[in-house]
Amino acid sequence: MKKELLSDLLSAAVVALLAAVVYALMKAFGRPLGDPWLTAATGITLAMIVVVALRRQLRDALLDRLSAYWARRAGGAFGFVRFYPNFRHAENAIRDNFSRAKTSRILIQLGRNILGGHDKALLFDAARLKKRSDETIRVLCAGKNSDQFTRQRAKDLGSSYESWMAAVAYTLTNIQALVMEGIAIEVRCHREPYLWRLFFLDEVLFIVPYIVRKQNEEHAPVIECRKMSQGQPSIYALFETYFEDLWDRCQPYACVDQPASETQ
Image (cartoon, rainbow, N blue to C red; front, side):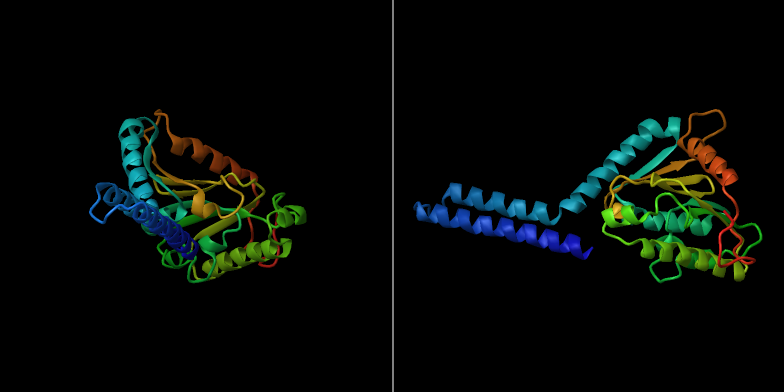
């Protein structure tokens, strides 16, 4: 958010500087204050400043309109509900659906910002409230032996192998804490590449594709889908089959009996 704000302010400052240059040039060529050309140039420049300052809001509003149109045209056939410009815009919807869901299935990688125990973790506090017997959570998260976690890849991305290992351990430790609090949560460790994060929350699915190597949450769109009737083409059903097949292929992580190791 701070980087986006600084970028907006810098862009607006550049346009404002250009406006001053245009104004000075118009005055230098003898254009009076009431001259239509000077008025038009000033008005256009001010409009540019407004557009630059509000470009993200305008973009988001446009995407909302497009997603609503797509939902009307394709939703009935494939279960599409909404398109979010990035993960930050979808966080409230994911958290609200998770809080209401009786059955939650989640596919993540490191997971520290999803089920980590810190204040900004998206679902940890909501998960602590799921103590009813009919509420279950299944989590597929990356294990320490994932092929994605190599020292060379960490170096290429400007990160560190040690920080990745610490993040995996941190997520698993916090999931273990949820189990100790009586939350019905199961976890298995996968070795999948960075393709997407999936949040199945009852009959709603949020798909978060990995499309950039760094800061994916700021750039990747989020697709919300709903479960369709049996026999209908469904994005939800396609990813559900993928999740369940992956779940069956991964070994359970013993959160309580073996908290310091993975069984996979």
